[in-house]
Image (cartoon, rainbow, N blue to C red; front, side, top):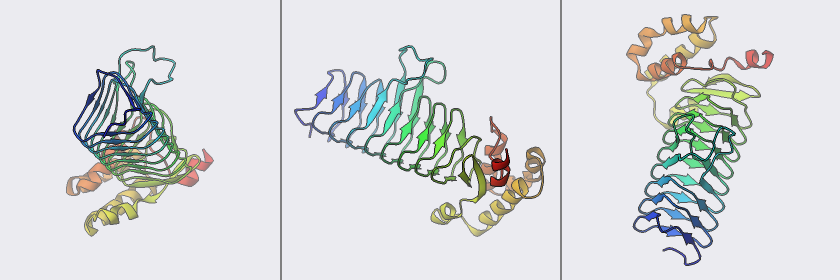
Length: 264
């Protein structure tokens, strides 16, 4: 299961039924969970913990130091959950002591070819990042988010759960849960209706989210006015509460309508 041409540090901890291809390098302080398959020409540096049943394809670089100038070689970590697919040429950097000290990737995520996940990022579960999309340092991505090819997210931004980022978008503000954004810079263009359909969100919740979107984006309210008007709906629908919470917790302000973004 482990090719003899692979180089594995004696301190690495390899689980049961792990496959490691030729010319792959597994460094010191790496833990690999049961059933994980790593192709040829992969580099995994530690301290990094990789869970069970992951697939890592050729030429991926997992757990490398960040190039951030603030990083001075301090011990930091990367944690990857279970059942993730990490495709060709993906780069994932460990954290920095200036932040949380760790980069975290959850479970059941798909990182397509040449995706970059920067230092101190926090990715949830069931996320898709398409080819060449990039999350800079300190980015938070919620569960079930879908980030299109070549899309870019600068440092410290937050991508809410169940969102859709259109391909080649530049996301300069936080994206509320369930919202679809597009453009350069990205602006809100509606809800992620396809994502809600795929996850069988009930009709009453969908209707409540559509009204919440109109209150936030279409009625001329300030963010604070919109949040106040959505308090009852947030109590009635967990989906609206997730939307409201993602807005109220925004650090950088939320994306606005695409026309507003283009004019800014």
